[in-house]
Image (cartoon, rainbow, N blue to C red; front, side):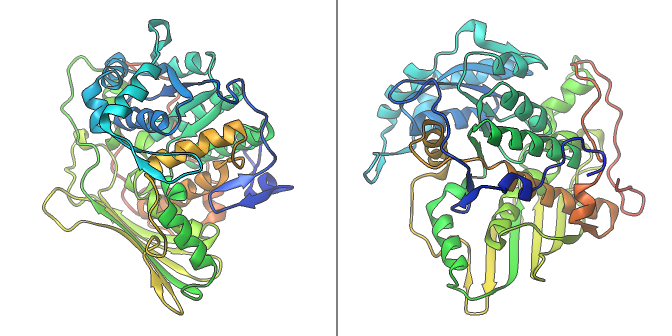
Length: 446
């Protein structure tokens, strides 16, 4: 990439490595961190919304040797609200999960046992409440082993880069960026994480879900013959409802509090949510598409500033290098209409939903954190999901840019795109100029 000082590709990352399973790369056995053995690993979280709070519960449910010691968020009310929930037995009991007795079978954990196990390990002292746009920098410089990244995805590249530079193992929610420039930045940091033998686990939880793992393996082994067509659907309701603007909020603060309406923060539905289906299809196909033609628009979302500049529906026709097409549909319409979240893989000898050929396992939201900690401690294979998660994010961005521009977009074009949505400055009162809803034929792909 001409304008990227640190070019990286899957080939360069995998040179001299061996792939293990379908969701991780085996490099070499990682160095054991300070919390090895029966000692405790110290975790901090950046982004204290609902997803981040639940991720903490999942992490502590699956690993008795992890404690939460630091929290960071742009907003103090988000941080304190999350911490209050984590210290509330009623909140924890409503999120009762499943654990695994190592070497044994899955075992349901009672709400009472979960509260007893988790709450003593919420050890966030007042001097480890970090608030502001630089809060993530303070957190990653703390005495931590693990950094959990659960902010809106527009921040993922800079936060991941900082965590890797600080030598931390990272759990990062998906997607990992909202523009090609950010994805390349994430890829470069992922390469550095591999060099440092830092574990990187993504929130693409299907990769840790036993029914999906076994189904994909059987598909790869020929259970449905050669794959000839793929279908993916994420027809749902709005994830995050817009809220009225408080008069005391500056432009940037308001966009953060209404983040799912703004492209630079959320990436649009196909990137932020439909990612799961598209990432899964890349897993089935063993790589990314080479071309896409997409269409979309805003049929339901009003043309008002409150609703930002993203679409509410999109259809995409992806073409993989072997000629197989993926037909993809996503939309976010109000309650009361047809909803469908599903996948279909069609082969020459049969078809699969992607999970119907496997057997039941424990919650993948807990399993991913068990595998994450096992990798850190050397009890399991080394995991670095940086590249597949980045490629899937870029696949989604490729389709979004096709829909916005009305153009067919190739993989080479999106890999070399100069699009950079990151603001040049950050602050609660920073002025944000309104960005119009993209109109094909007028919108310019860069």
